[in-house]
Image (cartoon, rainbow, N blue to C red):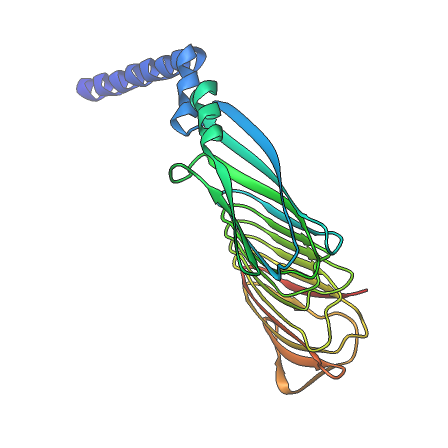
Length: 274
């Protein structure tokens, strides 16, 4: 019995010593080392504005990592304006500033195609490059990033948007004509006026999808989700030859001249009308 009491007392004493030691460490300057282990502590940022003539172009490609991309439709014929934001975190301000200076943007044109690409010295861990680009609304666009959002305003041609760990938002009073939007761990939100005969293909995981369309637009809908519900907007929907369940809908509204395909998991699908 005495041995059991002695062991119990020893455990209590050792626990008390560990707790006091941890408290001392947390109250000391050594705590500053903790964020540095995860690349944090100090930050640096640099911004620059680049331009490129849009004459003769029909397609724009934008690629980044660990950064957001925002695309804004401007006036046709105007130069493409690229606002770049370089950001880095490191153990010291000097190191963070050095990492920022090592990042750049490469712009290359091949015939009628312009490519804007984020360039890092090494594989980016605590570095990011984000873009806000103003361009002609009539250009076809491909935008790809990771760990960042994609946002599009007032573009009317074909658009392809791909990201991971980021949301996708598209708003336009006219178009886009066709749209492919794919993300993971992010939502997709649309408020657009697509052309008749257009096709939108929306895919995400661990995120909801919300689409706002003109009420008079005929829609052929193919929507599927898991661990989520599907909420249809107003209008007369026909399910003849289709399907209607909590997480799977194949239906048509009006003449069905616009094709809308939506797939998500762990998220709901909602259609709204203007």
